[in-house]
Image (cartoon, rainbow, N blue to C red; front, side, top):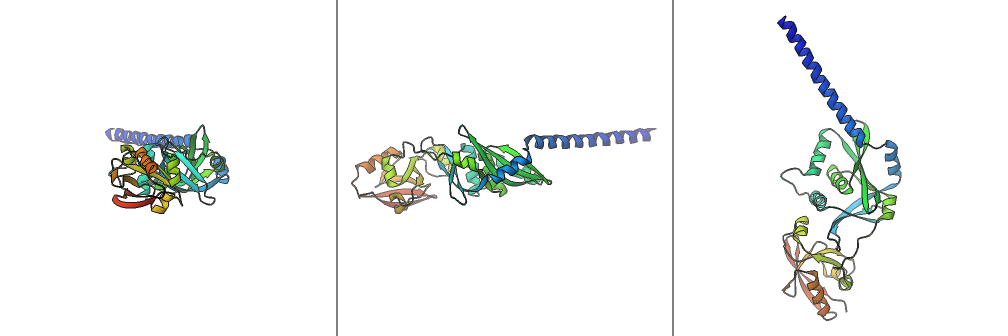
Length: 283
Protein backbone atom coordinates (compact mmCIF):
# COMPACT_ATOMS: atom_id res chain seq x y z
CA UNK A 1 0.00 0.00 0.00
CA UNK A 2 2.70 2.56 0.83
CA UNK A 3 4.37 1.81 -2.52
CA UNK A 4 1.09 2.36 -4.39
CA UNK A 5 0.51 5.58 -2.43
CA UNK A 6 3.97 6.80 -3.42
CA UNK A 7 3.26 6.02 -7.06
CA UNK A 8 -0.01 7.96 -6.92
CA UNK A 9 1.71 10.86 -5.18
CA UNK A 10 4.52 10.94 -7.78
CA UNK A 11 1.97 10.77 -10.57
CA UNK A 12 0.02 13.69 -9.07
CA UNK A 13 3.17 15.78 -8.71
CA UNK A 14 4.09 15.08 -12.34
CA UNK A 15 0.62 16.15 -13.45
CA UNK A 16 0.83 19.32 -11.33
CA UNK A 17 4.26 20.15 -12.76
CA UNK A 18 2.99 19.60 -16.32
CA UNK A 19 -0.02 21.82 -15.57
CA UNK A 20 2.29 24.62 -14.36
CA UNK A 21 4.39 24.36 -17.52
CA UNK A 22 1.28 24.49 -19.73
CA UNK A 23 -0.12 27.48 -17.83
CA UNK A 24 3.21 29.31 -18.12
CA UNK A 25 3.32 28.66 -21.84
CA UNK A 26 -0.26 29.93 -22.24
CA UNK A 27 0.52 33.10 -20.26
CA UNK A 28 3.67 33.74 -22.32
CA UNK A 29 1.80 33.19 -25.57
CA UNK A 30 -1.08 35.41 -24.46
CA UNK A 31 1.41 38.13 -23.48
CA UNK A 32 2.97 38.09 -26.93
CA UNK A 33 -0.39 37.95 -28.71
CA UNK A 34 -1.69 40.94 -26.75
CA UNK A 35 1.36 42.92 -27.90
CA UNK A 36 1.29 41.63 -31.44
CA UNK A 37 -0.33 43.56 -34.29
CA UNK A 38 -1.98 41.85 -37.26
CA UNK A 39 0.51 40.68 -39.86
CA UNK A 40 -1.37 42.60 -42.54
CA UNK A 41 -0.37 45.80 -40.74
CA UNK A 42 3.28 44.76 -40.88
CA UNK A 43 3.04 44.26 -44.65
CA UNK A 44 1.43 47.66 -45.18
CA UNK A 45 4.13 49.32 -43.07
CA UNK A 46 6.88 47.73 -45.14
CA UNK A 47 5.33 49.07 -48.33
CA UNK A 48 5.05 52.64 -47.00
CA UNK A 49 8.33 52.92 -45.08
CA UNK A 50 11.91 53.78 -46.02
CA UNK A 51 15.14 52.73 -44.36
CA UNK A 52 16.80 55.30 -42.12
CA UNK A 53 20.34 55.87 -40.87
CA UNK A 54 21.09 57.08 -37.36
CA UNK A 55 23.25 60.17 -37.82
CA UNK A 56 23.72 61.63 -34.36
CA UNK A 57 22.29 62.71 -31.04
CA UNK A 58 22.17 66.49 -30.56
CA UNK A 59 20.42 68.93 -28.27
CA UNK A 60 17.54 71.19 -29.14
CA UNK A 61 19.07 74.67 -28.68
CA UNK A 62 15.77 76.02 -27.36
CA UNK A 63 14.63 73.33 -24.92
CA UNK A 64 17.99 71.56 -24.31
CA UNK A 65 16.13 68.30 -24.94
CA UNK A 66 18.09 65.45 -26.59
CA UNK A 67 17.18 64.85 -30.23
CA UNK A 68 18.03 61.70 -32.15
CA UNK A 69 18.71 62.55 -35.79
CA UNK A 70 17.67 60.01 -38.41
CA UNK A 71 18.15 60.42 -42.15
CA UNK A 72 16.61 58.48 -45.02
CA UNK A 73 19.31 56.35 -46.62
CA UNK A 74 18.49 57.28 -50.22
CA UNK A 75 16.98 60.77 -50.30
CA UNK A 76 18.86 62.00 -47.20
CA UNK A 77 15.67 63.43 -45.74
CA UNK A 78 16.17 64.30 -42.04
CA UNK A 79 13.93 63.05 -39.25
CA UNK A 80 14.61 64.55 -35.80
CA UNK A 81 12.85 62.90 -32.85
CA UNK A 82 12.85 64.47 -29.38
CA UNK A 83 13.62 61.87 -26.71
CA UNK A 84 14.35 61.61 -22.99
CA UNK A 85 17.78 61.93 -21.38
CA UNK A 86 17.87 58.31 -20.18
CA UNK A 87 17.02 56.94 -23.62
CA UNK A 88 19.51 59.31 -25.28
CA UNK A 89 22.20 58.13 -22.87
CA UNK A 90 21.41 54.49 -23.64
CA UNK A 91 21.61 55.14 -27.40
CA UNK A 92 24.85 57.09 -27.00
CA UNK A 93 26.41 54.32 -24.89
CA UNK A 94 25.66 51.74 -27.59
CA UNK A 95 26.88 54.01 -30.39
CA UNK A 96 30.17 54.53 -28.55
CA UNK A 97 30.36 50.87 -27.47
CA UNK A 98 30.85 51.84 -23.83
CA UNK A 99 30.43 48.76 -21.59
CA UNK A 100 28.39 48.96 -18.41
CA UNK A 101 29.11 46.98 -15.22
CA UNK A 102 25.46 45.87 -15.16
CA UNK A 103 22.89 45.71 -17.98
CA UNK A 104 20.55 48.68 -18.37
CA UNK A 105 16.93 48.28 -19.50
CA UNK A 106 17.73 48.00 -23.22
CA UNK A 107 20.59 45.57 -22.55
CA UNK A 108 18.11 43.48 -20.56
CA UNK A 109 15.62 43.49 -23.46
CA UNK A 110 18.39 42.33 -25.81
CA UNK A 111 19.40 39.58 -23.40
CA UNK A 112 15.81 38.36 -23.07
CA UNK A 113 15.23 38.35 -26.84
CA UNK A 114 18.47 36.48 -27.46
CA UNK A 115 17.76 34.12 -24.56
CA UNK A 116 14.43 32.97 -26.01
CA UNK A 117 15.80 32.81 -29.55
CA UNK A 118 13.90 35.83 -30.90
CA UNK A 119 15.23 38.05 -33.70
CA UNK A 120 14.40 41.71 -34.29
CA UNK A 121 13.66 42.03 -38.00
CA UNK A 122 13.36 45.83 -38.00
CA UNK A 123 11.93 48.75 -36.10
CA UNK A 124 9.60 51.25 -37.76
CA UNK A 125 8.68 54.81 -36.79
CA UNK A 126 5.04 54.49 -37.79
CA UNK A 127 3.25 57.74 -36.98
CA UNK A 128 3.40 61.14 -35.30
CA UNK A 129 0.32 62.63 -33.66
CA UNK A 130 0.27 65.81 -31.58
CA UNK A 131 4.10 65.86 -31.67
CA UNK A 132 4.22 62.32 -30.20
CA UNK A 133 6.02 59.71 -32.27
CA UNK A 134 4.98 56.06 -32.41
CA UNK A 135 6.99 52.98 -33.36
CA UNK A 136 6.83 49.21 -33.59
CA UNK A 137 9.44 46.50 -33.16
CA UNK A 138 9.10 43.59 -35.59
CA UNK A 139 10.10 40.38 -33.79
CA UNK A 140 10.30 36.84 -35.16
CA UNK A 141 10.03 34.04 -32.64
CA UNK A 142 9.87 30.35 -33.61
CA UNK A 143 8.64 31.18 -37.11
CA UNK A 144 5.95 33.56 -35.88
CA UNK A 145 6.02 37.32 -36.61
CA UNK A 146 4.99 39.90 -34.01
CA UNK A 147 4.61 43.68 -34.09
CA UNK A 148 5.32 45.16 -30.65
CA UNK A 149 4.26 48.70 -29.79
CA UNK A 150 7.12 50.90 -28.58
CA UNK A 151 8.36 54.42 -28.09
CA UNK A 152 10.79 55.32 -30.90
CA UNK A 153 13.63 55.98 -28.44
CA UNK A 154 13.33 52.50 -26.91
CA UNK A 155 12.90 50.90 -30.33
CA UNK A 156 16.06 52.59 -31.64
CA UNK A 157 18.06 51.59 -28.55
CA UNK A 158 16.94 47.97 -29.01
CA UNK A 159 17.59 48.04 -32.78
CA UNK A 160 21.18 49.14 -32.21
CA UNK A 161 21.78 46.31 -29.78
CA UNK A 162 20.11 43.71 -32.03
CA UNK A 163 21.79 45.00 -35.23
CA UNK A 164 18.36 45.59 -36.77
CA UNK A 165 17.54 48.16 -39.49
CA UNK A 166 15.56 51.30 -38.70
CA UNK A 167 12.63 52.39 -40.90
CA UNK A 168 10.24 55.34 -40.93
CA UNK A 169 6.88 55.58 -42.66
CA UNK A 170 6.43 58.04 -45.51
CA UNK A 171 3.76 59.93 -43.57
CA UNK A 172 6.15 60.42 -40.64
CA UNK A 173 8.77 61.92 -42.94
CA UNK A 174 6.13 64.18 -44.46
CA UNK A 175 4.99 65.38 -41.02
CA UNK A 176 8.44 65.67 -39.46
CA UNK A 177 9.35 69.08 -38.13
CA UNK A 178 12.85 70.42 -38.23
CA UNK A 179 15.07 71.27 -35.31
CA UNK A 180 14.08 74.68 -34.04
CA UNK A 181 16.54 77.49 -33.55
CA UNK A 182 16.58 78.68 -29.98
CA UNK A 183 17.72 81.93 -28.43
CA UNK A 184 21.32 80.69 -28.48
CA UNK A 185 21.14 80.59 -32.29
CA UNK A 186 21.08 84.36 -32.66
CA UNK A 187 21.99 86.26 -35.80
CA UNK A 188 25.58 86.34 -34.58
CA UNK A 189 25.80 82.57 -34.33
CA UNK A 190 23.97 82.02 -37.61
CA UNK A 191 26.54 84.22 -39.37
CA UNK A 192 29.25 81.94 -38.03
CA UNK A 193 27.36 78.81 -39.04
CA UNK A 194 27.11 77.42 -35.53
CA UNK A 195 24.51 76.38 -32.97
CA UNK A 196 25.76 76.56 -29.40
CA UNK A 197 24.37 76.35 -25.89
CA UNK A 198 25.47 76.51 -22.28
CA UNK A 199 27.08 73.33 -20.98
CA UNK A 200 25.11 72.05 -17.99
CA UNK A 201 26.04 69.11 -15.72
CA UNK A 202 23.21 67.11 -17.33
CA UNK A 203 24.57 67.72 -20.83
CA UNK A 204 28.11 66.95 -19.69
CA UNK A 205 26.89 63.60 -18.32
CA UNK A 206 24.88 62.84 -21.47
CA UNK A 207 27.84 63.41 -23.79
CA UNK A 208 30.41 61.99 -21.35
CA UNK A 209 32.33 65.26 -21.20
CA UNK A 210 35.03 66.11 -18.67
CA UNK A 211 34.27 69.83 -18.75
CA UNK A 212 31.94 71.18 -16.07
CA UNK A 213 31.33 74.56 -17.73
CA UNK A 214 31.72 76.09 -21.16
CA UNK A 215 29.83 76.39 -24.43
CA UNK A 216 28.73 73.21 -26.17
CA UNK A 217 28.79 73.27 -29.96
CA UNK A 218 25.48 71.59 -30.84
CA UNK A 219 25.83 71.83 -34.63
CA UNK A 220 28.17 73.24 -37.27
CA UNK A 221 26.98 74.33 -40.70
CA UNK A 222 29.08 73.08 -43.61
CA UNK A 223 30.91 75.89 -45.36
CA UNK A 224 30.42 78.38 -42.51
CA UNK A 225 33.16 80.29 -40.74
CA UNK A 226 33.10 77.89 -37.79
CA UNK A 227 33.45 74.82 -40.05
CA UNK A 228 36.31 76.45 -41.95
CA UNK A 229 38.08 77.11 -38.66
CA UNK A 230 37.76 73.43 -37.78
CA UNK A 231 35.12 73.58 -35.06
CA UNK A 232 33.23 70.31 -34.71
CA UNK A 233 29.90 69.24 -33.28
CA UNK A 234 30.43 68.19 -29.68
CA UNK A 235 33.32 70.59 -29.06
CA UNK A 236 33.22 72.56 -25.81
CA UNK A 237 34.53 76.13 -26.11
CA UNK A 238 36.37 76.96 -22.89
CA UNK A 239 38.13 80.24 -23.68
CA UNK A 240 38.27 83.00 -26.28
CA UNK A 241 41.51 85.00 -26.48
CA UNK A 242 42.52 83.54 -23.09
CA UNK A 243 39.25 84.64 -21.43
CA UNK A 244 37.25 81.85 -19.79
CA UNK A 245 33.67 81.35 -20.97
CA UNK A 246 30.67 79.78 -19.29
CA UNK A 247 27.67 81.21 -21.15
CA UNK A 248 26.79 81.52 -24.82
CA UNK A 249 25.88 85.16 -24.16
CA UNK A 250 29.51 85.84 -23.15
CA UNK A 251 30.89 84.54 -26.45
CA UNK A 252 28.16 86.32 -28.39
CA UNK A 253 29.00 89.61 -26.68
CA UNK A 254 32.70 89.10 -27.39
CA UNK A 255 32.02 88.48 -31.08
CA UNK A 256 29.72 91.48 -31.40
CA UNK A 257 32.35 93.84 -29.96
CA UNK A 258 35.16 92.42 -32.11
CA UNK A 259 36.10 93.98 -35.42
CA UNK A 260 34.97 92.45 -38.72
CA UNK A 261 37.57 90.09 -40.08
CA UNK A 262 39.29 89.81 -36.68
CA UNK A 263 40.80 86.50 -35.62
CA UNK A 264 39.65 84.88 -32.39
CA UNK A 265 41.69 82.18 -30.67
CA UNK A 266 39.37 79.61 -29.14
CA UNK A 267 40.45 77.03 -26.57
CA UNK A 268 38.31 73.96 -27.21
CA UNK A 269 37.86 70.66 -25.39
CA UNK A 270 37.55 67.84 -27.93
CA UNK A 271 37.37 64.16 -26.98
CA UNK A 272 39.09 64.83 -23.67
CA UNK A 273 41.92 66.90 -25.15
CA UNK A 274 42.37 70.68 -25.36
CA UNK A 275 42.96 72.08 -28.85
CA UNK A 276 43.26 75.60 -30.25
CA UNK A 277 40.96 76.79 -33.02
CA UNK A 278 41.50 80.11 -34.83
CA UNK A 279 38.20 81.59 -35.97
CA UNK A 280 38.14 84.29 -38.65
CA UNK A 281 35.12 86.54 -38.17
CA UNK A 282 33.19 87.36 -41.37
CA UNK A 283 34.23 90.68 -42.93
